[in-house]
Image (cartoon, rainbow, N blue to C red; front, side, top):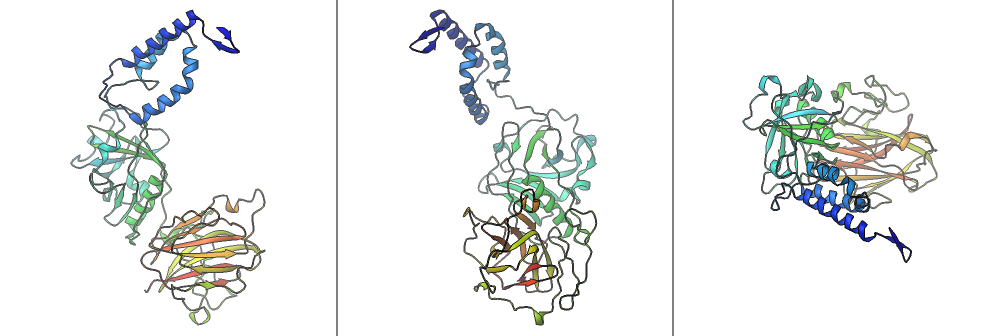
Length: 446
């Protein structure tokens, strides 16, 4: 190297060596390459970006590495041309891999796909407009799909648009439940699809369909991998399988292994039954009440404002939310701990937005009731009360409420979003004590 004006530049001999390196790499890259075929364009673009970062180091490696680099380049390990052959890819470890059959595929041969050929990564275009039906066999797993999902596998279909007008992709369970990504399918080079939220129409399906819907919304929403195998007769879907949802009567409280037990209350008007342990949504949350002593329902066009609003300065926390179905209304309960008395304001906003960020609330449902609760404290360092961020409930087993989200506090206030099907409904908000909890009732009409 020659030091010229403070900059190190190659000598003439070194420059010639570098030119030879560049020529060898270009020749290697052109082997077996069809210029009219774009092989995994998005992956190749990533290779080019990585190549720019490593270009200087690669050239300075010298002519001694040309043969090795060319061989690796030609093999495709650095993203070089691989020709139009399908991308063979092993099924990823550490995931549960479900098998979906294409129309007319029949049953899995001999109960196994081990001899059906090498799995490969499909393109999103190949899947557009296709429908696949879940089978009971899993990929290299002794368990069954029905055992993991808790429902008849043959009633679940995976659908990728309609090939023409319907964008997005998702699933249908028992011709009732279902979930849908609104965005078109996008697959990385390794067949990975990204995590995201699935929309659902929350029809109130039979128990088996509901279990299937709950499972696949969680499983697909967490992201995963897609493969096809056996002359494209079988679609492999590798996901992290969520725990099987218990039936409502057996739902357990978070952090416990025992079913929640109704606990009678003595400090409130004569109770139905009480379940003051937080539960995972869609379960009974009977609270002590008699209609004669509770506030009436408010017209959906009117806000509800508590005495002393906005107040402030409290030391309250809201660790959990629960919801249940009652005769004529759905009930949402915000459990409170700490000290102080909350104040609140409730209304149906035209555009539910999150305080602080101003972003959309992201709550399912046709209408959303927002309850802003004041008097909230920030936890001490190390206190996990809000470590999970939002506390959300999928409540589409109820009469009207389909999703509930409690946000972490912002400037002493937090938001409770109650999403529901259909038009805005009459509601009421009130406080109960011993233990403290804020109750939101939404009329269902039956």
